[in-house]
Image 1: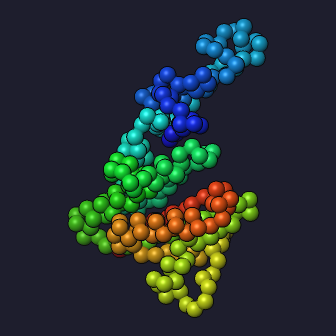
Image 2: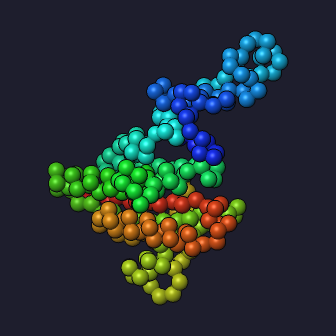
Image 3: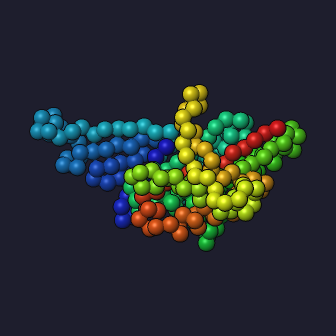
Length: 238
């Protein structure tokens, strides 16, 4: 899945595209052109070193003109349903800074529901499906969330919910142990010792997300800019 965000807020990237990039959401394709070429690449151009256009296919392609609602509907539906059914799911965004990754994942809380990002929508849809599943089958669910920041070249791990975790649940006396990675021979690399807080409602899960974002914002600006947020929702069914 690909979302195209041009520096400077460039628009009109649909089928018209730009001098080096053309996106076709209907065909779910992106075409990349040699910037030195204009239009069709002839055999003479190719001999002169001009590359032919390269076409890349994706499950979905979004342009700056597409709404967050469209992006969430495409990216979340199957993933959230799979999680409630017992499978693992992962959604992440990656790219250069200042291209709208945070807006895509979080949206804004100062607008209509259509401006909610992927993460708030995922929480709302997840709990709605859990409620439907509980009413239909009588199954019991428990939801717990964690939030860890990975930052810097040294890839430091920081538990963003550690302070809340110590106050909300029994964690013993003194500072919380550090988060670390453990190599498991069966499951592979596992994150260990992070706070995992119970979230019985979508509102509580959203509260923990806001708390994690606040803790992240309070960190050093340079460290925050070079960091990644891992917000994990664990769904247990009994």
